[in-house]
Amino acid sequence: MTRPPHGAPAPILTTDTGIPTTFRACIDRLLSSDTSALGELFAEHGDMVFRAALRLTGNRADAEDVTQEVFVRLAGAIRGFTGSAAHFPGWLRRVAVRQALMHLRGGRRRREVSVDSVSSLTMTADAALERLSIESALARLSDDQRTVFLLKEVEGYAHAEIAELLGISTANSEVRLHRARRQLCTLLRGSR
Image (cartoon, rainbow, N blue to C red):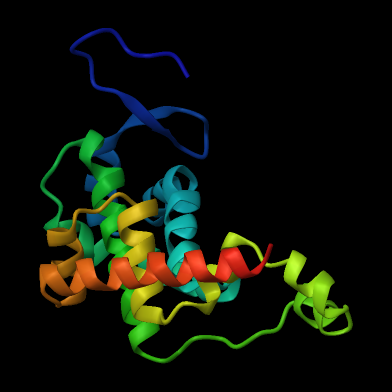
């Protein structure tokens, strides 16, 4: 994608006909219930929302549910967005994180078992330990510890932001991160 001349509005989205549209025009169309605008935003930002949800839920099906919920509610939520096109991905990621946290708190998590998990039951103890990865170690953390760890270390939030998102104190966020790191070290050391 080529950059527009300095000072020109950035055509960041493409309509079904392949015609570029400005971000603000897309938002205006979304506010007037134009579903094609929602499709354009999903095409542009859907993967980012899914990845953020997947990191927090640890489950593809839950991440898909969260992504769907974010975009279903986007037309109403977008009224609260006052930034520019450059600020939209960060704002949308925050919306996705909040939705994923509500999904986790709501206990609506899907409990599915992957083929890899089933096959690991038939492995020897040594082979099963070799398969322990960072991802599976993260899955062994408590939801509270994993959430803080991912928000801080992967998503890059500050402890104050994490505290606000989770409704906890900054000190509690720091403690949860410390405990998560300590447990991850123990789990990963034990897998060698």
